[in-house]
Image (cartoon, rainbow, N blue to C red; front, side, top):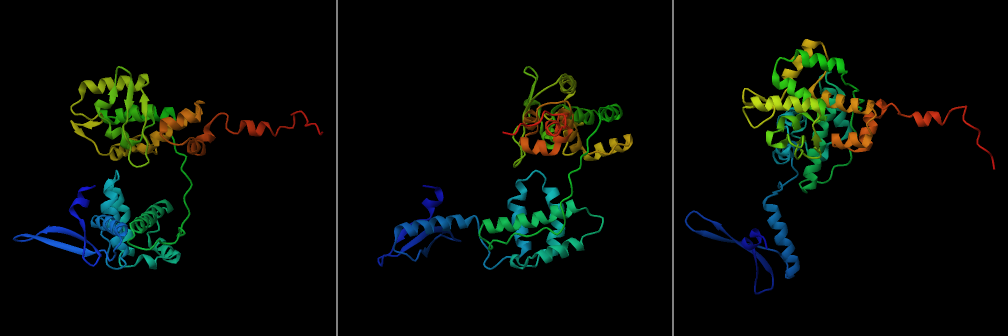
Length: 342
């Protein structure tokens, strides 16, 4: 029996009705409280107690809450568990400003279209979809907690943009490494290209996760569905990590003046701008995956390294494989022997 079950006890009145009783601290003395389960059936009363206790940490609003209320609850209860609360706050701000006083039952496809039209013209479809996906997630979260009735499936007012096939050549990477003045940026590039790890996994990496003897990097547990891998070190990253370890001033592999770094976006952007190369830190992960597929590494191995499914890797990177669709087009050759008719 849980601690809450010990605190909130069932008591049966002489008339047979079960009551839930508990004690609360008062100003001068403890106060006894009780609430009727409105049943004489012990099993139903037990269900009432379980639901009552669950409601203590999941208090529902008295009436249908506003969308602003749902967004706040989603942000404070789910968003704080995500990797980048700052990014979530950035995208949730315009949604809250537009929808905050409306009720979930008032959300329609037409309203989503009006929101999309209200956004600045320079914003991409991807940005608008990210904003509206937060609205949808918050409403699903509220419905899952039974604060609101389930909202019908909503149609997004803009099309999902095609994935950007952006990756760097080995010459471009060599240029970045040559012009990188900060050691932590050089090391970040080496790790990203040698492991295909996400930026967050690299920035979270500590020296305790690196086994120089076995030449392994354990990127640990990811956030949400972002899986991470245990990756062997190639010679390039092994040498760079050994150099960095000798000069390390903190527990974190990527550091700047002995302090952990939360993001390399700014420094990386300055480096790319100096080299006249269009890229972001995440492009290094795409670059590593693209190189692997172009060199003929089996897609299942690439998928394991990326922490993604083989189907997703084939969809995104399959076109870079030297054997991509080769078997299919060879089957269409006019020079193949004719098929005998039986």
